[in-house]
Image (cartoon, rainbow, N blue to C red):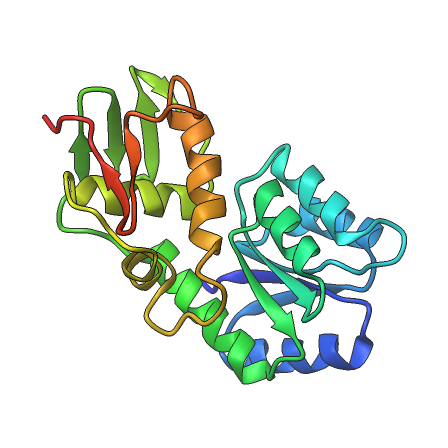
Length: 228
């Protein structure tokens, strides 16, 4: 079954161009030119991935993202203008999985989408990872802490899975980007810090004093909970 993608942008030329490129790759695509329409289409279309511009009429992209995250962990790539660093950081903080900076080439965006969907559909030889506090089911992409389910976004799950697989080893931002976002990722490596911060709020007893995902100063991040 083909992946379904919702593209949201008020620049109609860009919207139609991206749609044409994605349909050429075999994806099922719906588009929206404003935030209100995007939320309506999302509910009926139930896409596997959303490309979401921040600057939208009716309801802005950040509010659309906020509402999506109230009920869905769909993979979201936000589109931000090059100068809008604050929007990028806020968007990641609200739960966006990735971002692309305008202007961009449609081929560049399609390559990022293909890499993201490849990871979402991929499997692992080891189906389950278990530590003292956490359990991850790689096949079902589910996680639990002390038996209670965790509500993780796709990127948060992949980050946690990668850190647990490399238990006790410090992974740099570059290594995490390569393993979680893909070797063809381009962008600010601080995206890792934002997602680690959000992940800690979900898995740590005290996110301000983490004991599971610790910072290895000058080296990156390390998972320290004892593996079963």
